[in-house]
Image (cartoon, rainbow, N blue to C red; front, side):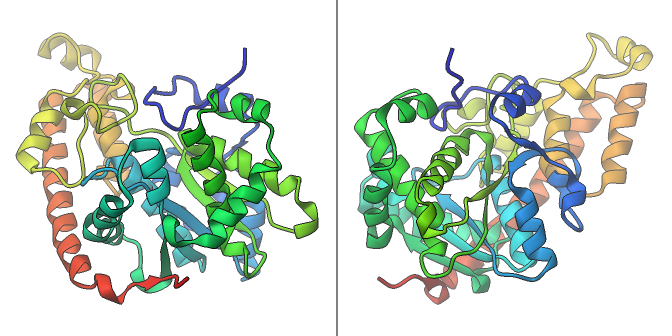
Length: 361
């Protein structure tokens, strides 16, 4: 049976080790980069492709780029977007030329969002939101897919290097909208190399790996043009609070969005799946199971920066010294601080939107 990762789906990966094996990924070793960030240290970042070439570029202070895209389909983020920005910021601070494309064409083709509406959402929320999450606007170049003729023209060239069967093998489906979106993304991923060939890293969730594989295949078939095949870095999903699927705005009752009213967010945290026992006495005696707890997962991935503090919560839960209610209260407090900080930075970023660097075509 053909193995598929669906970038448009919402299924939760059950076995990341199997994903690594099935798709030929490199197991991520946080020693490959200096001062790894929180999600790198905690094995939330779990795999990648061609990471040594990026490590070498950093060490030798040679040009490289980091790139990601914004799909302007709503007025909020989910926490997976936050992890992408954290990894972009990490490479940006190590000297990466940083690019953000606004995938307004893909939003129109795959999600039915008009170009005009996509542009409005990007300028009013998504771009300021990425800055509020930590991206340095002075070191970031932005562009709209629909305005970048070079990307669109390259997408047509890339399409000639791909067979229909190959496309179906990667994506599982070959409807026209998906094909157009995918070949345009190939152009986006390689766009920073149009003027200067250099290594590039694309930090994404594992669901976006099909786009990376397709681009690497195209590069391999255009060897005379001497593009660097894109490197990639994959983080695990932030699962929904009931543990059933990757966090998705399509299931709002079990997904905390960014931003969200803290009272609403806290209610969701209070109802989240935990690793607690059936009774307080059982938990005191047997201890909790943080490895099954969605609240602990939020602590691990997003809310607690200090490793020593996270370890204490883990150990207190395992020993029965901390009950689920106390752990949830800590999560609510941390979430409140995060949302206040985000909203303040979002307002500031909106005021400075006209100062950003957009590619002129």
